[in-house]
Amino acid sequence: MAALRHQQLSVLVAAAAALLMMSMTRLLLVVSAASDVPTITFDEGFAPLFGEANMERSPDGRTVSLTLNRYSGAGFISSHYYHHGFFSADIRPPKDHTAGVVVAFYLSNGDVFDKNHDELDFEFLGNRRRHEWRLQTNVYGNGSTERGREERYLMPFDPTLEAHRFSILWSSRVVIFYVDGVAVREVPRSGAMGGDYPSKPMALYATIWDGSTWATDNGRYKVNYKRGPFTADFSGLVLRGCPAAAVRRDDPAALQLQLQLLGSEKDDRCAGSEFELMTADYAIMTPRRRMEMRRWRQRQMLYTVCYDTNRYPPPFPGCDVNMAERQNFWEWGESKVVRPRVRARSGSSRRRRTAGGAPATTHLVSLQQAD
Image 1 (cartoon, helix red, strand yellow):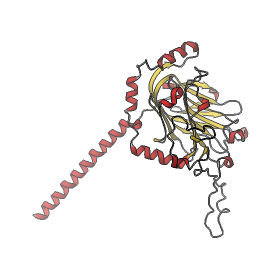
Image 2 (image 1 turned 180 degrees about the horizontal axis):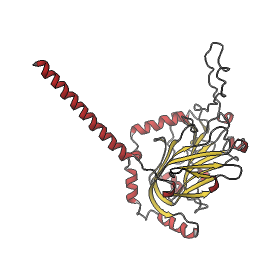
Image 3 (image 1 turned 135 degrees about the vertical axis):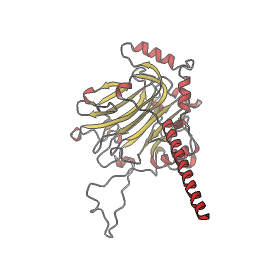
Image 4 (image 1 turned 180 degrees about the vertical axis):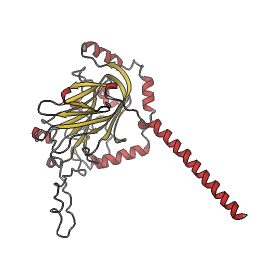
């Protein structure tokens, strides 16, 4: 009898455990669904910008390929300007020799405001064969390109093998850049920034173009079109924000006035949208997420304007200068510890083995040498 009761109790415990596991699974699915950001098709939120002959869309409209050849680059733009929001895409830049090639995913109103535009950038800077792509983020407000808040990083993966997610969150209080869901840069609005914080509505752009004059070793290596064409893929497109105005080119003056009014602090029509934006899970910077961001930056950051005392002898406005961290950077802002790798030539691993049979140490080079 005791054995039977023990067996029945075991069955009940197992059933309860299974029920609990099912409940937890359902809860996790609900949380996952709630935190997921819906993607859109190209036609639902975008239009060609230039080089339409070099633009190809998948049959379902969810992937767009942009190509740079000797005749043109290509790009697309959101159908609306947005006053704050969350913007994201899965991006795969071209592979092999890509020196001089620039792939960009960014917010801007430069088409409307020539001298006082705002801009938030992800720029992917191509490189010579076997050399790593660089990732650069920029923050410009009110035409502050001469005081640009640039940072440059290596990526902890080869971005040409598969698409990775790059996202920008922009609110009235903070800008956050994400790579594969990990915050990699946070720029809080501060009084020290003054008008340098981007505040006017911006459109979202994706482009590929020839940056031979500066992209690779300050223009030392140009685009070699014999190695082209060069194609970048964009998918998983996300536009989540407050639409401020439709993109139009028939009356630039009227559009400029409209965006200025919508960007003023007196206009609160996007207040509800921003509240929803900043209470989303990805916008909440918990201590753990800040620790992940700090770790990512320690391992991947090649350059930061905050420690570039050659350009800015006094501390740059808005920078959170850490004196211990500063010791890891040269006076021109380049990291002393994060250095690019040069990948081995295909099939050369056997030749590079040492006499004892162990592979030779990967050669690390400086920013200047790597390009």
